[in-house]
Image 1: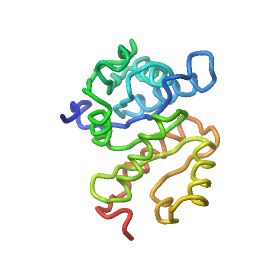
Image 2: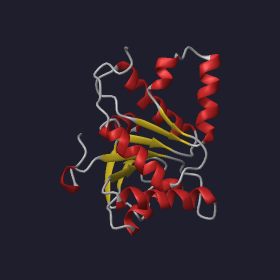
Image 3: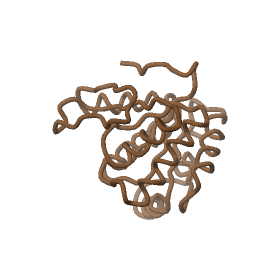
Image 4: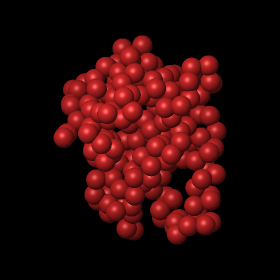
Length: 195
């Protein structure tokens, strides 16, 4: 159930994002630019492989000469991978897909809904419990607002919040790539959340 290797060991970056935001929305264009920037930076890119921003990321990667990975789910409402996916890895159910997402080197969460929130929450929880956690970048003011709510209303400590890298506003794709490179270069502790 491991993910395919590629690009001579280049890091694999997952982008968690919406399937519902379509072309014509400014967030689609930004996602496409992000996919292209990640690819030009020599990073391999994975998404859920479906429509919306997943398509935009995959399109950007492809147009920049990369081969995006689509982590899809078979039989999920008959959804096929978007046409820009270079390699499709199909899972039998959501839990298998989430396990596959846990194998990436870095996760970036941009605009999305419940699925994006689930993927980001799982990645964050894996950072809390230690081994196997991967860096997580949260891009956009909506994440700042959510983290503030969690800090105030849930049992979330400053140490929990310190596990995340937040990029508020609408950072340029190059700024996101720079933050990704920094996160990938940082030493990982096997007990990241237990300081």
